[in-house]
Image (cartoon, rainbow, N blue to C red; front, side):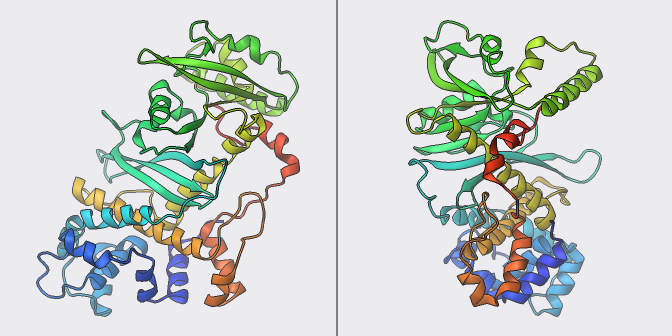
Length: 418
């Protein structure tokens, strides 16, 4: 269930005043405003509270520049023109970016998952208005079980250094990077492994050529997969790949889809091939009968089923982007200059981070159960009614039955079939 921006605004008004919103920010956020020159040039009120409050009217409530300045004046937050506000937004780029970075730093460490920090990766694009508006790409990392953002990066959607890939993220030892096919390539996996992390990504047959464990003999994918003919049947094989004159060891984990999912996958492939006037390879059709995961996780700590379960959690990051676009309005980019575009994106990220932190204070939402966990924080704020509203806000209610795990897995719940 989506929540509209007016519902979000009403929710914030009902559960908190400005002081409580400010309490969700880093403790030294006012000092950050001064250090980043966000207040420099203001002729009258130099209050960081009034400045950020005004900015959030624009970012969180999706007000136009004119609506924002009128509301700010009526609320005694400031008296300035819409042009002055636009210039101030541009000057606040470093301030908003610093706030986001500090809030990332405050994310608590995950509960121990075999000593790994699970990070779900994905990306999305937003466009500036107009026929020739610039496309921007948001590279995003979502941490589990915290269910909070632990890193993001903004790049243009095309050109050098803009592609989705594991190299876009800072990796620490024991980070477990989980991503779809876009993140499966030799350069990206090498980046993670060289920094002490692990990967669990959907195999991209066009981007990662696999070898046997010896690093010399080609891995016969078709021969291996044809042994798995029963829906839900799964198996793994030790493989490797070459990158920059070195061999990286990994595991090839596959589970067969059910007949209905296979038929749907083949239909999509054939439609796409027909549109391109291309001929499908037999191997392409075969590979799409399975969900195939490449991982560097050790087998003794992470058996095959654990690997498949970990990748199955990737749907959580899909919900995050849905929430960004429904709550924060991160769908179109209503700014025309590069500096204002970046500042607007950082402002939207700040709104999303505030929402995530608010939700985290009221209890995390498990992807495996209906319960929302401890409600102590909610009770302090007003009881069951508030919990229901926060539940809508988080948009993480999902019916997941462990008994249906293998059926759902085989039906392609773990990602796209293209």
